[in-house]
Amino acid sequence: MKKIIPLLLLLILTSCASYQAGEFAVHETGNHPNNVPIKAKVDSVYTNSPFVFVNFTFGNKNVDWVRVKSIKISQTPELSKANIVMGDDLSSWAESMKHKIAIDNHNRQVFIGSVTTALAAAAVVGASKGNVNLAYGSLGAMTAVTGIDEVSKVIAKANDAERSRMIPDDHLLAPFSIPPGLVTKRWILLQSKTGKFPSKIGFEVEYIDGKSANYSVII
Image 1 (cartoon, one colour):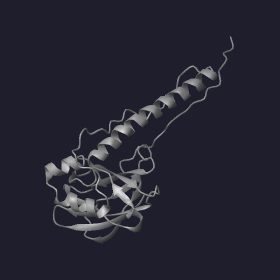
Image 2 (image 1 turned 90 degrees about the vertical axis):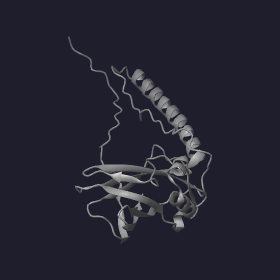
Image 3 (image 1 turned 45 degrees about the vertical axis):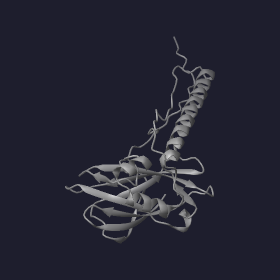
Image 4 (image 1 turned 45 degrees about the horizontal axis):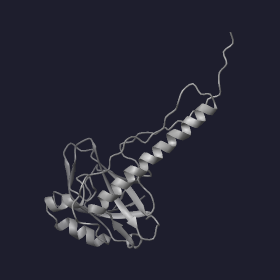
């Protein structure tokens, strides 16, 4: 008996996993440790005007740990009308983004269901970004500090307890370490007052050994 093969529409989401995605940061000035590649890339899932979510990855191809004491975002013309979102504002954004992603996933599933039904597909192809939980709970009463320079100064002067009320532990501006042979991921959320996203970010990294370096990266 001849088998009838129905026409199937296969909606496939493929992603080539990479330990360090995006563009390499350019070492501008200062003492950059050898074999420590830095990359940055805008995360399209969490970026929604006027917010831009940027992932940073720090690699370590050495046999010793690399420890970052602090990172400061450099004030540039593109960033002059941007805020670093933190504190209660960051918590509120996370809750709203979680709600948005849940609706987006639902709409995607409805679309896939309608397509597969119309084409008498034998299987349902599901596409989902996954369960995202960006709600870090209460991050304290402090709201976003206006201006890039102001944020850098506040974070630099804050002690551990004060810093934890403003930003999560995996935030770009929080201290961190990079294990040998591995990659550490950090992120930052910017809010543009003009609705235009910056094309480049400059930043200064101060390492625990006293060295520091300035970088720029195209996002």
